[in-house]
Amino acid sequence: MGISNFWYYTIIAVVLLHILVGFGYLIYKLSPKKKDKTKNE
Figure 1 (cartoon, rainbow, N blue to C red):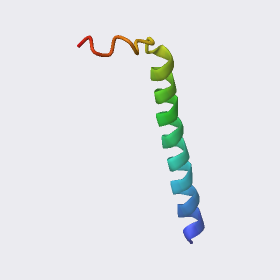
Figure 2: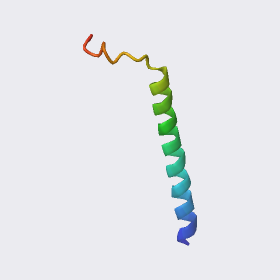
Figure 3: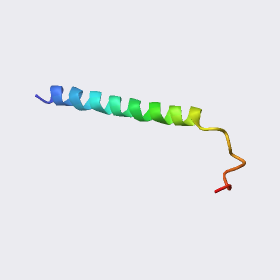
Figure 4: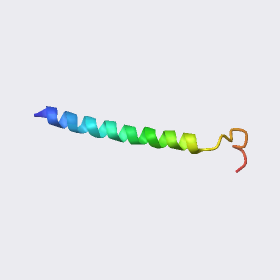
């Protein structure tokens, strides 16, 4: 009984983590490297 729910939640968790990691990677790659200009707000 619980096997289907386990796989259901596992797949959802993997997809959500994949999306979050993907967005984080894109933001990290697209963001310009301005480590020296962080105090320019």
